[in-house]
Image (tube, rainbow, N blue to C red; front, side, top):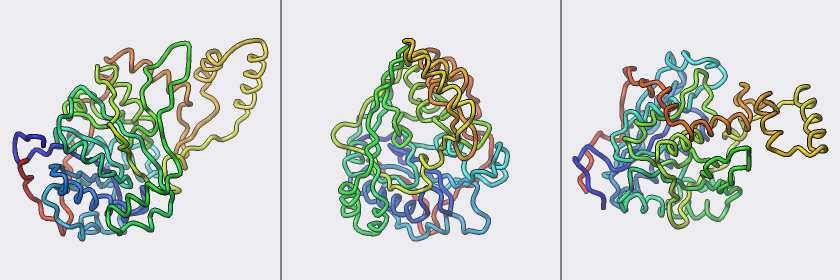
Length: 362
């Protein structure tokens, strides 16, 4: 088992951001993912904390501390709720289009986490026992970014919530509809490090000091948090942190739902796109390859891509950004030293049924 410096320092901090509405699949998934996690920590002896960042809480719903009142007390998992009020959310552009700023919300928890190692755990993610056993074994290295793939279970897995953890996880394993596996980086005029960026935000485990060195995820001035997980992976690579896959068959389960990331991305038609695709056809006929088309798309930012209704950079332009991050680690210093709302006084509570408690020594 890992050794801790003090009883108040958990080995792992799990960072979640949520609201008491249907965000990330709803409150029921948040409740059961946290409850199952507590069981796993108790069974494996993993001393941990779950930080739930309650972002922009709905005015007509009870706060998460009340909504999660039935969470049982678990000796090995402390639960902390940090609330970011609606007035803070309103500071970001287009705040009316989306009730959550995922990157900043994640950074709020990362900045305030006490664990030796930190990982973002989205509200509707469920960990198989093997993944918790890997973390509980200790021996994690501070110069590694640990990754695990995300497997999407069919929407009917929601019906299995509330069953025993083992039955629920077995149900997920039997009803996989999508495996977000490693996709090699495409060949370009330059070669990117072949990192596992597909759905990488669902499991990026780093030492706390490394998260602070990288200043968390990139924080945009609007409410989108598009591709910040991939940018984090390349920033880590530039800082000399090497990617390492969790051994065995460990993965992250996520139940498919219609408010997921993929459903928020759209590719609207435009005259520019139709014109440029014709130009691409002509270029290919006279012998130009993807490398030339790549630069054309990056320059003119087409085909258009929107996220939560806002225009964002196309894939090719994003890859250029990742390349610069991997070549020039100094770009990380462009992030604000106040990342994660460092100067903002934020209220912290616990679920009303879960008393605050000191973490036990391991």
